[in-house]
Length: 315
Figure 1: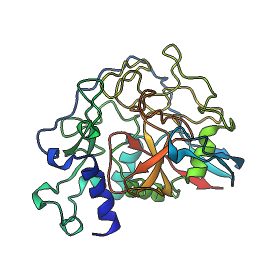
Figure 2 (figure 1 turned 90 degrees about the vertical axis):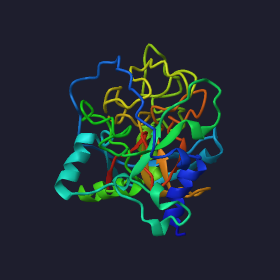
Figure 3 (figure 1 turned 120 degrees about the vertical axis):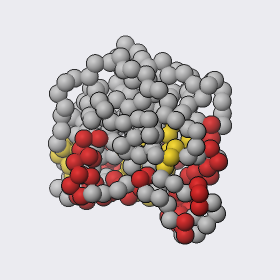
Figure 4 (figure 1 turned 90 degrees about the horizontal axis):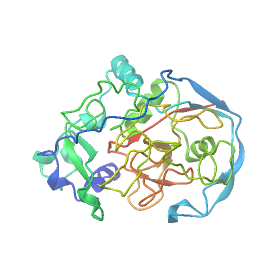
């Protein structure tokens, strides 16, 4: 089995999802938002001068350190995560078909029954009670889940044109970036942008935790994976881009909402490519990965309901 096959199959089997895939799993009903987002939709890019900064931090998770200084050359980065509307324009112009919309090649997955190889993707379904520690129960591989149907066939993009596109794999994100004449950010570029000049700060806005009265990002408030209080206005779901305050660099959603693909491979168990920024599923009592230094692997051949991206260009 080649490396690409191992990456995707590994993501599924590691979570114990294959047996539950593509059958009775339907999309979870989404709670109505309680936060009004600004009506203006900032777009375009932000030009950054680059410079020297500290990548990583004293590790809250082992993979986050040790911190070390690094220099980043000037570059520009998208002001927001790529939205459903923007990705739809790419698909309309090119006819591109995402990984989740393709039937996997049986030759790449000899250990999987051919009848189980169907277009599908990972969808977070949560847990019924606090303390459910088996991650395989929190996710399902749902047949028909893709960027057009983020939670599966019963869902669509109506009213979500401004939400970040999800269910896109690394290959899909890279294809979009190439169409725009751009690229995916390296980890160093992404983290430099996310830190917004606050070198060494715990969060992109400083060291203070967000509060229910003043949410800073779309994350999980409550006991993960069962109870999201939704204090930030979006309970267990994506929010429109630019719904929360911009950073000192004028960037939105570098923390939470959706994980973002980077160009760099993940040097650790399972391989894949590195994702940064955390998502609406990041809770303080569980992963707490909506901090700039947080990092984890995103399997290169798998889409998920909490992973998106933004693009960069070297100046």
